[in-house]
Length: 581
Image 1 (tube, helix red, strand yellow):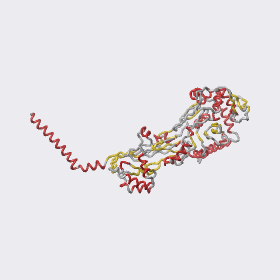
Image 2 (cartoon, one colour):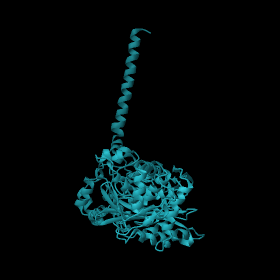
Image 3 (cartoon, one colour):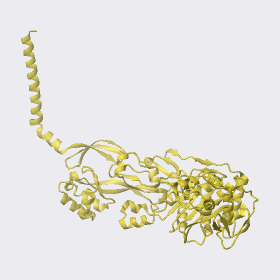
Image 4 (cartoon, one colour):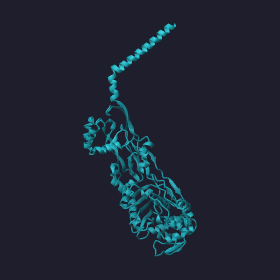
């Protein structure tokens, strides 16, 4: 082919391409121009998340303690409002929220203008109809059917159930699962098992017009409901404990010593989480905050143990052979240690001759001052630590405290002074720097019941998917195992059983079962005390550990808590009967 021919062919090709392009442009811009202009201006594709249903929380028998219920939500997407003033005024008249308040919600939401902002939850059917009837005139307003968390028993069990709340900016940064209007577990089981409860969202690919209205659903993925959490709690026992604690500031725990299962757990003051979700006013919230109602005293509160610590001092003294089970000490009404006189709790009276068992039953301070200072801080700390004090129990709740088991090294670093023998004396009776949590003490007494074997306390029984298939169970876990000889533990249990057999304490013996118990009174101020009572039943085959603790107690003495323990045990054994109510 000649050069001239090649040039001609090239020109022809260029001409044809140019004609084709011009023809296509003419077709798109002139012939179909209005069509594509309308499509670009009025239609676009969006991905819409479909909320899922949060899993239920149930007690061990399948009684629902928390669930999602359907609720109509009013949402406004600011970028779709055509006549904001008119639309908001109309909405205000229907839902009863002033326009300036609606604008405040929109402006302070932190949500981009192209995403919906929830203005009001739980619309009535009448309100829904009134808005839907004018939906064409309200392009930026929408009604969505969402799920609202509901706690059928109100404040009963709130301390371990927790509650849900709107996600924060930090939540959005940490997990891409969440969107602006999502709810997340804030406390308790709701937070601990959030990833199981929340489910999986669905999504729709939709075509929308310029006003934001959906024209067509192009594709959809259905959401997957959250998993259901079954707890070790028995709501029947839980309700009884809530009743027994009443409106006092305190804690009660019922624990299965054979597994570590929490059968019931109360922390008061408490509150109804439904009110928090519905929208609590500032005054109510402030009052609850002042009472520390959002604080789980059972797992987060740190308190002096009082005389409930004395079994540890006795174990340390027996294990180090500082004393034997036959040791007898004459206990006056006070004892001089260093330059300080330490009085017994019954001062000016005195207990006189005491052996380890009677001293534990009587809770003789002078006896324990004596054996504690002779045993020494190292041994007492060793056995206290070996039974789990000073460390978190590992209970499956967020925010657990570890308490404080003081040592000479700790005091030197924290206080800046040396450890004195008087510090050992104070620790020997559960006073001084020592701090414990109620769940630690319930678990410790589980260890006493089992001669040194403690299981990790837990609330989870099993997790099932929405079809009922079990996907996870909580097998009992050994927290620690301290080899405590039977002869040592017999001395401790004899003293505790002797206390439980006293006339004013026998009310704890249900059906003639043996009970081992220890009381405690901790001084927390000049004129204020905390009261403890911890017990297990029965001695040879322990089935339940019970604990009562009252902060700034107005009971006459810690012995006065025995009727409450009796009611706890009575309810437990009644429930345990075949067909128990």
